[in-house]
Length: 141
Ligand code: UDP
Ligand code: MG
Image 1 (cartoon, rainbow, N blue to C red):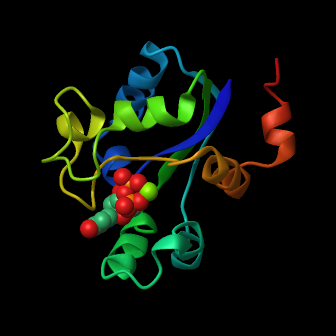
Image 2: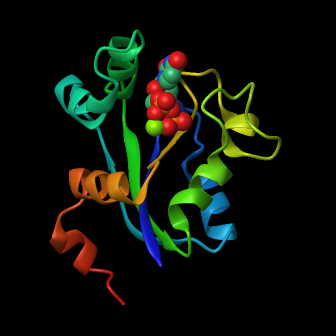
């Protein structure tokens, strides 16, 4: 069993796609272990995306990610990290496989509706960024 972190980005929340995104993960057998809506400050978005610091899209990305509410969730399942990435599709909705969240719902390479951790190691870091031990313990089963 793996755990991974997914976000419904501001464009998804704005277009009432929170339920649709969660439905697609649940339908594939992934379990929602923890869930919250929040707004990131610009500084928090910069910290979350620190690996992209220095990239040309960094400022636009972190401004966008702090522009409105997001929904953060911890998903659990077998190969959860890779499976969530598959269900999401490629970064650019135009290149994402048909039937993926980004192909079906994404607007453009920046406003691509969802985030998913790209490795088990980053998943652990990203889960800890959004959720306390206490919040995860609440649903331990
Ligand atoms: N992004 C962007 N322009 C780019 C590459 C990435 O706006 O050329 C944004 C996009 O929202 C993406 C996020 O930055 O989801 C993180 O980029 P990454 O390469 O990690 O893509 P992901 O892992 O989200 O598919
Ligand atoms: Mg990434």
